[in-house]
Length: 320
Image (cartoon, rainbow, N blue to C red):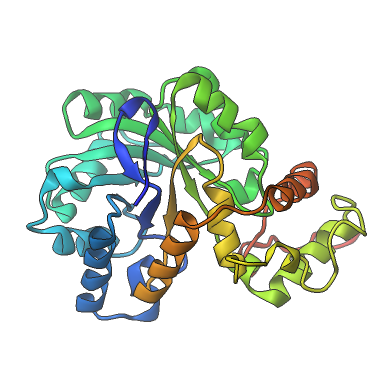
């Protein structure tokens, strides 16, 4: 396993981290039995994965992790959870959420507590709970504080850029993948300058690995004028990244997500031990050829788009 410093936290974290959200939620989305989900967590630990991300919003993930980690030495892993600020936040709500999370996780602290899913329009509302978050840190319920974005609606990472400019967070979580690499220019340099830890999320999206959805997304971007018509093929738009040692788009995605030295860890949300093993082999294996990485940057940074799951697509506005 490769380990990197998580910015100013000085924590050594594994390059591949275990996420409990996304489409799988440790297997809850597939109705996996609890024993299987516990095995997945223990297998991750056996591989050397030492950073685990969760949130109250991820169904029963906190409780499942608490069960799976019971008896595991607490100093052997880094644990992250979250709180999603809302309009009309009542004082003490963040504290109660964190205390509930700690009870479910069977621990007295987490390493990182994030403000969850902060969008540019809600940035100021979210920051109203900053004092409460800082107090939780001062009281030892979390060692460090962080912020996550909703990159699907914020491909320019406006919320994270603002947070980095204000420099009050120790860690950020950023959406970064093959077709939305804008963080390389907008976020990573600022994070490195301020020694803020970077956790990568959304390295693999269903749209990227589903041929039909990827073809539809690329066609839409071309139709909107965000991608030149000859930039990538209409059919199998990303197959040119494949080659020796890069057998799938998922392989390419993990390699690309970990390329920047600004990134301390890349989260994987798989529910499969076999997929977890494959993702680890990809991220620790030889990097993408520089020519491929450069083409990805040259093609998709100017496009400034993010891939949306069909369920996230906003309905078209009716013509008048």
